[in-house]
Length: 269
Image 1 (cartoon, rainbow, N blue to C red):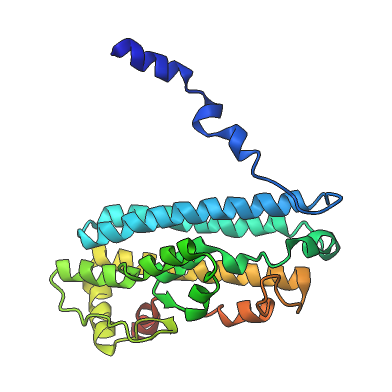
Image 2 (cartoon, rainbow, N blue to C red; image 1 turned 90 degrees about the vertical axis):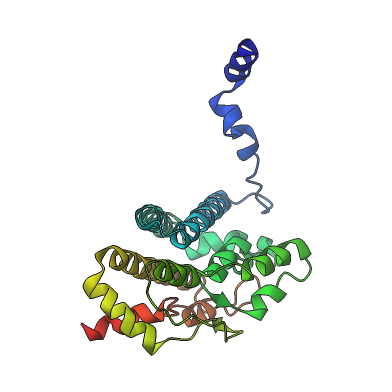
């Protein structure tokens, strides 16, 4: 048995473990003849999807940690997510080395493909409590992708998990009802805001998590802002390849706070 395990271990290499050969075959430019900058465009967006996958993996753990009352494990997990978000924002600098002319040289070959169709990013939004029938309908021709989004809608939002965390600490929380079918599913709560002010003043452990949630909210806003400015810089006011309003659509999403109660209390200190 031991010899067999050694044999399996010896056969595992860096290349085979990380599936490097398969990974490097995934960049397939559509332009004919191939435009030089399309490779960068593909690589950057594939890397984003990998980061989205990791963030979803971490947010699954983060919500479980909250619901189990594990303050420091939850804090450590969220700090990792925040670092990933910073890395994602910095990658826009690389994408912006491509000029509008260079992007336009292959943009037509993308047909209807668009970042608007990123299912993993939509999963992130759903976990944050955002809802949009249009986002679900975009994938009506791909039922397996729709299923992923609909299943995510049945999971706890981050705010619901945080409220369960506060209940574990014996706070009498007003439970956030899901009342909106468009935008943020939860409404603000003046009662919970008063509770949060007390927590910020008297419960340092829970207060740290409150501030990390604000950091995450702000990090998403920063990502959206850098993304919209990159789009404006690259295609101006053109419509997106997926049929969206391009930069106009992205502008409408810039200031959508996902934890509005934590922002509202800033003026109460």
